[in-house]
Image (tube, rainbow over all chains, first blue to last red; front, side, top):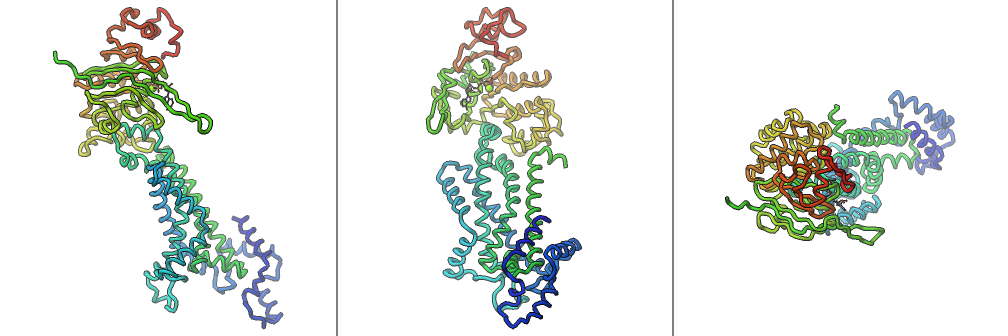
Length: 307
Length: 270
Ligand SMILES: Nc1ncnc2c1ncn2[C@@H]1O[C@H](COP(=O)(O)OP(=O)(O)OP(=O)(O)O)[C@@H](O)[C@H]1O
Ligand SMILES: [Mg+2]
């Protein structure tokens, strides 16, 4: 984590973006004195290492600092945006997990048949589509042509936030969530298929068949049981890519979540905000991987009984 | 006396496997060449033969659970009807029950009691399963365990319990007894004999020829995928002078308690 924070810090220091210029935008009336005052206010006049250590010690006290572009505490911004991002990622994660699992199981059961080849083909295509491209495609089809969904922003324009209904929020969530789900499906489908094929050729499946269990009973009694945990584990480990995907999807749909805020912070050189989001997302990905590891260990019923 | 019905008749069975060698070149191997057996209702047939002689393949062929790259020749008839893939699927678990050779045939992630309950009538699956457990010396709490938590002998008994169903006409037991203590061994053998006495046809595949003889009516000897001979169980006495085929005789005499001679050809026996 510390390594990651140092790395992001250095990258931002080296970036050609002058945070002050970005902050004031095109305003050229900034006097050198004002500029200096700003630099001093933000601590930009001090050496980078000192800036980093100040930031780190503040972080350890739970203080993420104040965003330069929003002029609000970083924690507050993250809290605000995290809900939107959590909704987006949560829905996509569940959808892609469920759909991918069903497709994977179906393909494995129909291994070698037309349906299997079709599902595999879709998965390969999905796996090779870039997020922003898929996002744009959906945007063009559903928003521009069909006009079913709005083009951007998570709430309708010209409506105050108190009037925003849950329906409005959902309406704006559909396309980004769809984009992100579609991207996650391929991963789950292919892994579930692989694992299920392996399970279906095992001795306990042969025995189940010998005992007169039908294909459906075999799947229900033994297949799902033996495939579910590896699939869920894999899907937790996918948190990292999910976050990466959400940054792009949020950007394409101007969905105001952590992802688009992160891009914004990066482009405007808003160091505290950027660092804050990077840290939070690292915790998020780390949590996903930890859960995956724990689940992995518990696949073995030996350990499951131990608790 | 009324003619007994032949439940299972296998004539001239051959099994080959298509294997890939180096890329797309295929090759056929034929581990079973010409195998014939017959089992009547009310009879226990012991099937013996060295390791690799094709005993398990025969069982799997009857059940229709051979791997996809296998092709069969010859005929299998069940109660006078040719046994097709679809009739196998219909009969499995209903009229034909199977006890596999290895305990790996149990689902590693399913509690053993639940595995025994599969295929039992839903209403009293619970009580039947408990009854089967006590019959084969398993404790009620063992049912809540997963296969890895039970000993090999206990798993054998679980496997055996899965095969005891009403309505069964043919039981195929592929070495149901290795690693089992004497009490459970006799419980299993007695159950097989009881099946036969109730009119079931029993195929007992085994390496333990001595115990098998205590319950068997006939013995079929296999060698390299072919039937050597089928003979009455009572012919296995003395030094085997009533046995027709020299291979059968050598098998019998190779047993430690009969070791008058020791033939080289059966050193892999036991
Ligand atoms: N899937 C397969 N592909 C190719 N060859 C096979 C396959 N299964 C079995 N065989 C071969 O068929 C022969 C007979 O195997 P089988 O399992 O029936 O022996 P067995 O008599 O049951 O032996 P054991 O007493 O050790 O159980 C062996 O030589 C084995 O190598
Ligand atoms: Mg065998």
